[in-house]
Image 1 (cartoon, chains in turn brown, orange):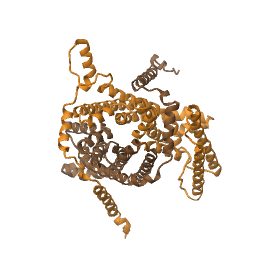
Image 2 (image 1 turned 120 degrees about the horizontal axis):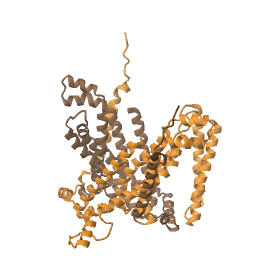
Image 3 (image 1 turned 30 degrees about the vertical axis):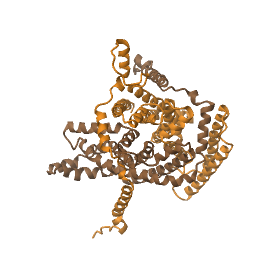
Length: 264
Length: 355
């Protein structure tokens, strides 16, 4: 005879679920107190009125501003291109050195991985703020920011790609007496090349998004215009900038999807 | 004899053409950036920054403890901080996490309707003209509903800015979308291509539109409404996160196995049954995992929102870099790194359990 398995009391009263529920409720209340969240502060006549005025301005863009936007926009794309390339070049040795199937020294891999992990935790604008302080206002600070930002991402993406390749060719080359460099060139590179380009395009896309903002703290590009127009309450000009960013982001996303489908 | 197929001329020169195009793009990019903007003092400042990172300002962390010690034991520890409560590193980092938590929580719910809207669950088969007419009708109903909601807000809160042409605007939008649907129908009838799907294309476009607004711009817009402070940051993140969460959740719905849904339909279930018994239970783990992933990113976002006055640690960082207080900037950077690493670790562990 079939006997139904008995559920323990913990399962029967959903103790875990209830605990999680109360934990989340507690965290919500706690964070609301810390952040001073009061919904009626936003949903009232004045605040919503202000907000609506702002949106109304944004819905009537000042199109002639377009001619001012093009230059910084090209700067933004340049920054993203250069930053992605340089960051990737620096990331390649780090990715190789942190892959288990290439470097057998455990401590070396650990150190390299910790470095790239720590770099990846820093948000783009924090980096931009520090680098504008060091290098002065302008696209150079933006390039360096994007370089570091790219480095963190590419090092991780590439090291994961390298660790998942087929071990056969590596062992074959090793058995034939190839040196480390030869193994990397003839066994690793051909296997990860497509993933590499795909990751590169993805990182470029992320960087274009990031580079539209980092100008806000003075690191060059279209973000500077965002700051200027918002500070002058010219939301009709801000709308033009946002519209241009929308077009560029959609175009680059579209192009990248196409190229990555071809690579895959 | 076997003929080796010859590569055509175009095929032969293709790699070279691609290489030349990429090279040209990069020459254009490098030529356009002015590298002469380096400050004279760059070397000195770099040294100062490193010095600050090596000798961080520990008092920024220990301020509450110092205050407590001074008050209870009269230890007389000199404190460089203003004595205001909640102005030390740990309090500010907690505030940052709280902003991210609330923002992610709200957006997790806001994102679900957008996810269902943007998921491409329409069949691959060709639609009939009847279905297309139905789509146009649904579109009209949906847009009218949105307009009425905005109109209702206007009535309830009594602000008088949205002009009467809100309805005209909606009508024009609907008209063009209808044209799209008809054009797409004609294209579908003569070829196999589908360029426009009334539901998912709209949803995907709305989500892209939300994502294009940088969180900083959103924060500034909300600051205009509710004044500077953490609340503006919470609102900004709740809206901004919807763009990415809606996209990820929508992709999760697209990737679902359709089997359970079909089984429920075959057993005589209604649309509501398929939603509550098949789609939601299957999609829930992905939704949760996406939300946790977005929480990791939101923590990073929240730590920069302060730069424009929307609460959190960003404000202290931008202040300390402006007055070149590098020990203070150093301890803030260290704090952010520790906070983000910790959150990533916790969230990673939770996500492993969910999936």
